[in-house]
Every structure is written in C-alpha cells, then in structure tokens.
Image 1 (cartoon, rainbow, N blue to C red):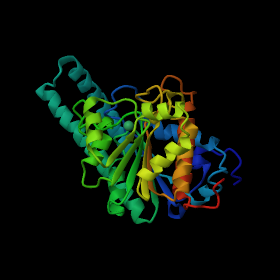
Image 2 (image 1 turned 30 degrees about the vertical axis):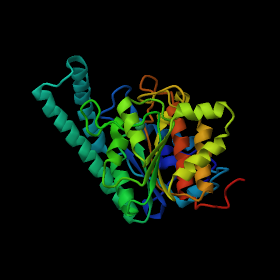
Image 3 (image 1 turned 135 degrees about the horizontal axis):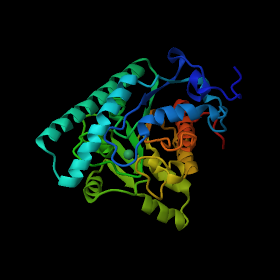
Length: 349
Ligand SMILES: [Mn+2]
C-alpha cells in the first residue's frame, strides 16, 4: 500500500492496516458519556476520529515515520456503547430532577446507584483491557468518550510503573470535584478520583484550566503534588512577553521522568472543538499543544500512556468533520510522541 494515498478508515486508524501483535501502541476506544451534563456526542468521538483519520499525511516533520512502529486501534466495543445508550437517558432525567428539586426521590436514588455501577463496570473493563496491553509490552492510548473514561487506564499504567510517574492534564476544567450531580464517576471528577486513589501519580500538572469552582481551587492549592498553571496566568505571561518555550520548560521541569498525558480536547480553544461537551473561551492553540509535546520529547520524558477525550462530532450536521479532524491530528501527535524514543534523531531542530 502506498501510505501517501488517502486510505479508508475501515483499514484501520489513519488508514493503516495494522495488527495488534506487531504494533507498539494499542488504542482503546471507549464510547461513553453517561454523566455528560451539557453537550452530547462524545460517545461518538472514537468513530469521528477514526473516520477523519485517513486525511492525515503519514509522514510528519517531527515524528518522521514513527507510525511504522504500529498504531493499532481496537474495535469500538458494542457492549459499552449499548450500556452507554441505555444509561445516558436515565442520567439525564436525574440531572433534570436534581436541578428542579434540589434532591432525588428514593426511586431515583436507586437509578443513581444503577448508573454508578454502570460507570464502575466501564472503568473495570478499561482497567482490564489496559493491563492486557501493558502486559504485552505495548503502550496504551485511550480514546474517549467523556473524561470519566481513563480512570482504569491510569490505574493500569500506575501499577505497571509502581506509581513512579506524573500526569500532564490538559483541560479547561480542574476536574477535581468529589462527585458531580450525584455521580461518583463524573467527567468532572476524574482528577479528584485519580488523586484520591492508591494509584495516584507523584505529580499532577494541569494546564489550560479556566473553569472551576472554589472547592476545586482550594483542593488544588492545598496539595503539594498538584501544580496548576491556570490559563489566565499563562495568558497574562504570554501577553506581556514571556515565550511559550519558557512556559513549556516550567511544565516539563515540574514533571517526573515518566509522563502520562490526559488530554481533554476542551483544553484547546473552542475553535478546535466547537462540538465538545463543555467548551470554554480561551485555552491552548493547537500549535502550542504540539510544541509542548516536542518540549517533553526533547527533555527526554518517557510517555507511559495517554488519553484523548471529549472529542465530539456535530450531531446536527453529519458532514461537519472539523472536531473529528482536529481530534485525529491531535491523536496523531500523541501517538508520534509516545512511540518516539527521547532524543530521537527524527527531531527537527
Ligand atoms: Mn476534563
């Protein structure tokens, strides 16, 4: 096959016909958005990214022919999609009831329990799948779904590295809520759940953050193992002349040698993700994100896994591929970074 030709997504992600056995990186799609509170569609994110992915020219100035190491995307798991489609309307009803009455009826509390159990089931599946990938000596990259999806992947990565790693978390939101709208595994609670767990990283470094509540801010400030570079502060520095490269250096120096990246696409400017669940003005430019990847690479960081979440296609206009297009390109950069050995000669000076 000529890789410079536009290939079909049915062959595989980026149009590459790969096999898991010979691939360095396994991509796990998780079509899940049960507790999504605002916009809809991110459960269809993996499909949108897959469909847009063959548009990408495989040769990349930064990562060269890194794709030859194999990026293998697993099939979108039907059972999770079905469970999602079954639980999501129930969760929406509960959110509406909570907003109207401020509390849930006893019957609704039972439904809430059912939803929380469904979320545990999803997390357990992700954990087992991720553990398997790591046991095969491969890297895992998760494609959400909402931001509740990577908890099991982070646990598996943490266990594989005995907790000796840091998380770089790019997001518009702190995601440090203890629970949100009654759901223990809400998309808004992912980093709370991670940092409250036994498998927490040594360091959590947050970037792009511009939407959060007082409790989350207090928690972030109180923990020495959480460093947040608030978007407002970063922009103030940029606008008064600090170079992005200096800010990236600070981020890189805050992280341990091994890094897991949790990338919520709403960390980018909403220009790049207009259909994501909770878009917020401000945020990172695509080029700033890819420059940061390069900075991590040049600093010799080892990427031990990643997730890309909250990419959502337009539900009203099926021809609008923009969110999937950006998602696929971001994914391609994350893949290239992950499989490229640090200090690689492929790096452009
Ligand atoms: Mn998030």
